Image 1: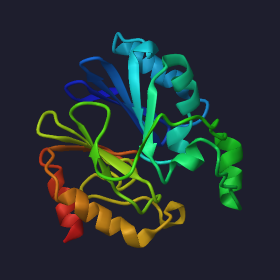
Image 2: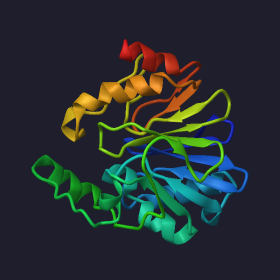
Image 3: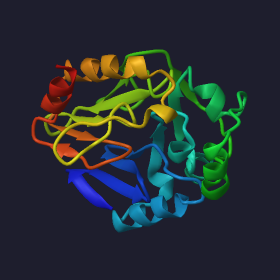
Length: 221
């Protein structure tokens, strides 16, 4: 775990990140990482001198299992409200089942399958979230309901999820084989480039600090 900016912590679980944000009434969790790894979120909270019961809200960027893996367990233990885009809710709550095939079937066997769980508030597009100071930005492409979140703190902190991927020098994207609509991806990155933020964190890859928005603008051309 490392602190990205004041009160924003990145928790690394293998190849994926979850993020913890300290707010006035507790802690917000953005994504929950891989299945069977929720204990790592608990350890991170302990390092922060916090308890899982202080997690008040879980903001989901999208429905993929490496991001929803610990959702059911953390929701049970914390009582936190879960927020996700309405287009991804059916996969998260189990009313729509996506059967992995080929290589993804093997990956699912190794990684595990997330337990379905309810979503307390669904989002329909851009706008406020239940957490003051955090705004939802619909960024479809990786999934239809993929949503990024912008925190109004320290010049702006963008939680990009898998709308883009961090890199050593430049912005990247997640593989096409796990992206529902690749044509939407550059449009969503351009949309994020029209915002204003100094820091960007990702589901995969290192964070960008210092006018991070310029990386998005460069990618969009």
